[in-house]
Length: 385
Image 1 (cartoon, rainbow, N blue to C red):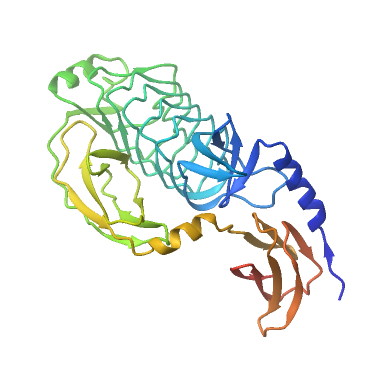
Image 2 (image 1 turned 90 degrees about the horizontal axis):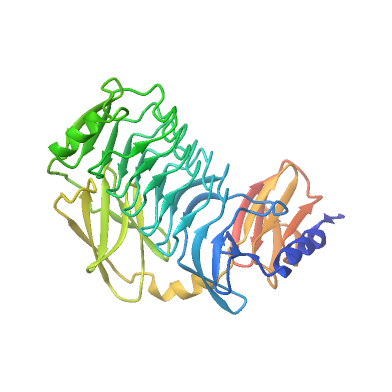
């Protein structure tokens, strides 16, 4: 049986990308260098046959070619039109580019970094977000930032919010409530910011803020908004914690609220995501979680402790490549840093069809309409051609 392989061609392309010393991949995420020791999360290169899909917990640092890089930004359009479902960003990130997650229609949950300065143009437009908490320090919600988020229900804006640009929440027809901690109503510039929306509850810090918002030509439009002062919270919340993988435990949140998560005295996250992923370390770590509207009236907290149940495996997992194996139109695609290992392909009866050293690439020529077991190093994937 003759196999037609395009491995060498694709390998050449990948080497070309890496030879530029500015783009590389690690653990299924692509990065572009922005300085001697800093990187931005980048879009998948056009010559790589994969796509961002599923859950991504972006690390604060990534190691590549002898250098520890700090992850400080998300590039323009990095996850645009991807299939990512949940994204948790590290606090090392201070800037997220235009259209970074736009039209990722599977994205239903995101945790923004604490030191973010601006929600950029169309950053989350067209996503499937339900709740979003914008961290303190953000001043501007840029043009079209949340436009056409058809499932968006609850938005928590910080006290530092000064401006919402045109189309900011246009076509968010399920938007039900906005918690805005800014005592002075943010300037709503341009038009179509809340076009066609109605009956949105806007909760602001106190009665004085209600009066200020009521005088504003945008926020005082009672056909669109109903203004309320903030109230004390009473929330029953689960402390459900389950292991997600060898490196993280998953904490269930929910309730259409924000959550402040502390490790000791240090605030590590402010999120309205459905889940937050806590790292497993070599020592037990206790976390305290406060439900909040972002206005200083936090509800009673719960505490959870992450035990080092998978600590012996963490170092190995962080250094282990994780190839992506896909089958499409009679071709098996293999991507990832898997050089120096072996690829073996078996049918479901154990017959060996293919065996050779691994490279990124495409494998053609296998009989169609069969189930195959693809083994790349320690990774095993069942595919159907």
